[in-house]
Image (tube, rainbow, N blue to C red; front, side, top):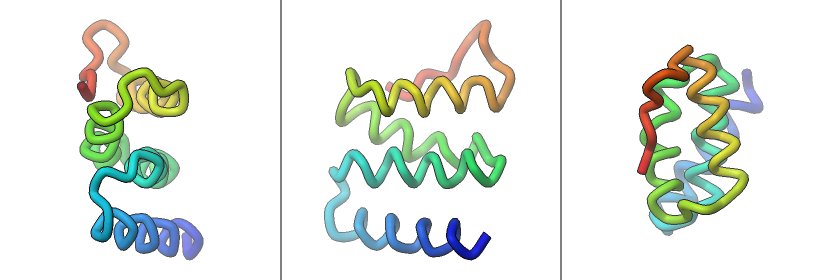
Length: 79
């Protein structure tokens, strides 16, 4: 839990300095996924997907988020 808190703070700080930092958005989304909070992951995954729609890492995170909410019929695509 402490590592996730530290990661969240570090990534949030990085995004405050550069809101277009794609890896930070994706990794912050993954922090929320690791906490079992797919809804909390969505804003950052949306941002990452908008900035880099063809990134395999982001597509993978989105897939994990879709599975986390159990919505495979109508996925809430982030971009």
